[in-house]
View: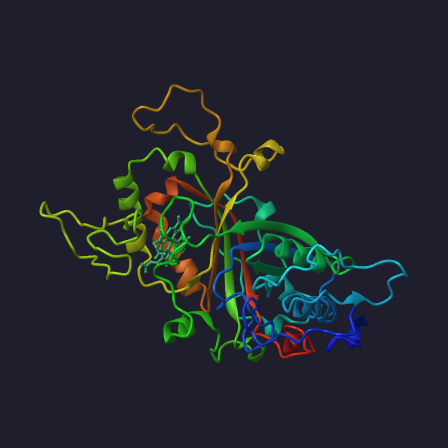
Length: 413
Ligand code: HEM
């Protein structure tokens, strides 16, 4: 049986009885459709972001990779084993059985193309998405080049960490000769038992004000439809990715009321300061009896008010792994810091070894007006003293593909 759409690269499916479960009924997310999965899909519990560089530029090469990867993604998101590459010697298999017997756990595999794909000599320059330019440097950046940029992105999300790991192995196995790995980042996100907004690692609910799928705000903020954009990109989006380290040890030393003023919302229940419930309207004009703004002038939510984008971020916690492996997660050593009253006497040094924070992943259709403008507006954010942006990348996320076709077919044919 020849896997649909994969004949040009000689992939053969590994099974005679393929399961056709592209209907999207739980726990599956459809791979095919007008938009790629993993954007409007409800956020899964685990994510892996993989960025790689192409070993050669040009349409043909990119097409080969996307043919292989789309065929794999179409199968594994439906709970099937990945198709075997053609020409494997007898007794060898590209599958690992790591995902055998597991349900697909709403697996989504989302592909993105970085600015380098459209560079000189690629033959694709005229097809470059209008805003696909490297993110400018911001004054507060402390970027580690090891965690920046990339030609092709894969965002893998599922409700089962082993399903994510299996998907990564299946995709990585198709990379030799086509692409080399640049960086990977693993994240997690747990929903409260009773449902509702998940919390970030500072303990605040994160995602309260986010465009909701199926609303015109979502469509206006996320999907690319502009006539200024190349036709192949319509129905796509941009992903801005930032690895943001959060200095949890410092944050934990702050009194709760100060944490709430920094964000502009209560950590306990997510309500805006001055409000009662999480989804209450935010009153930016309200003043206390002594004339102070209830939501401080530089509160995070005030500074970014009105910048609509789909924040689909994940928490990460690498503990001291990276520091102990010899890399410094903290390019700028932690300054002397405040201690909560009653903190036992101690020697310092532990703070800068922790690498934990937010894999900020935001989908949008106009990065200069959305992420870049918002990040500039955050220049006076008191959060800046408690976080560090250490990784950065931007990708054009092609629209979805039809059954039997690869992602970005219209760009690469
Ligand atoms: C580690 C860094 C960050 C933390 C801890 C953080 C935390 C939060 C929290 C707790 C909220 C309120 C709840 C919500 O509406 O989701 C929020 C809102 C928001 N954040 Fe952040 N944020 C971070 C970085 C960023 C960055 C880099 C941007 C964009 C440049 C951004 C843009 C937004 C926007 C647009 C909102 C909604 C504001 C509104 O309209 O009310 N955040 N953030």
